[in-house]
Image (cartoon, rainbow, N blue to C red; front, side, top):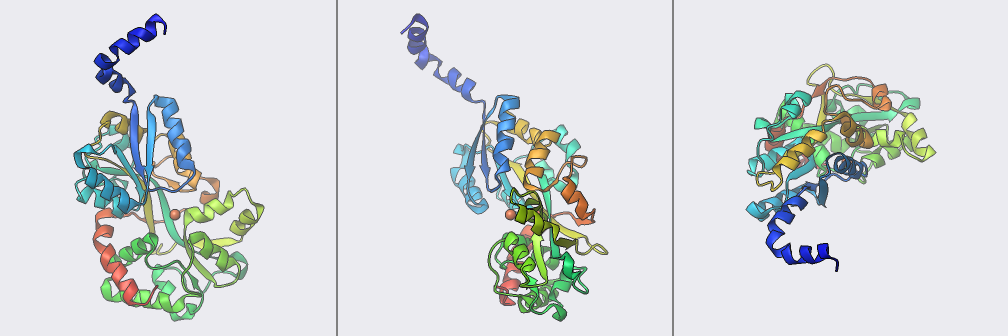
Length: 340
Ligand code: FE
């Protein structure tokens, strides 16, 4: 040991709390996002701020339950998840606190932030209708409601009713059309399915292009990821797809978000706010939103040329608390209607 090492060893116990403080340049994320590009964003933040990022990944319900169970001892600073209703749920469970950042309030529109500023969107995705460009648009398919029309019998490819994206969509239909109409809608969808629901959104697009049905429903980023895939056959598939942004003449296309909430008991609150602010920078929006081919949450941030090529659209901003309140009934109606 040299003199310095001896000194260090001798004073380690004395200085322990102070050393820990210095090491506290860390932020803990509980994330349910499952996208490869997120790691890049965390690395970029560390590089810029010197703050390390610790990530615990699990599904959203497990993460919220874990934060709740850990209580005041939770190491979680930030919860990252998809679906505005889950962020609203975190807030309703009392797991969050106001972010209180003027930077974020200036960059993220109010409609994409939670009540009291407890959470914020970082990116947006639309759930849209896709068809084979070569076959042309199926007749009369301008609204989500049209997916249930008898003329589309046997033509519809959409994943199961239990899928969160579909629950959120049905919750928004429920808010717009009421329970009776929503159940009838779900019954029409079940009747129109080209096959029993299977696979994820990308599988619906592929099945549609393979001729299993004329109409696929998927989130925009799944098409976007095909369009930028390393594999030529994926890019060719994406080029064959044309899209309909539903409900342009009324409430707008159903949009949901990826977002982040500040945990009420965040042990590293300052680092967490800094991380959340970082997510609104052009560089972070490019990685976080465009890395997964989503629309950015920051109004003037870059939109990928492929997404631009799909065209602009009128959107129904996600009302987290309302989606949360409507989800259980929406799921019940879908299941009662026989949408598996
Ligand atoms: Fe997804």
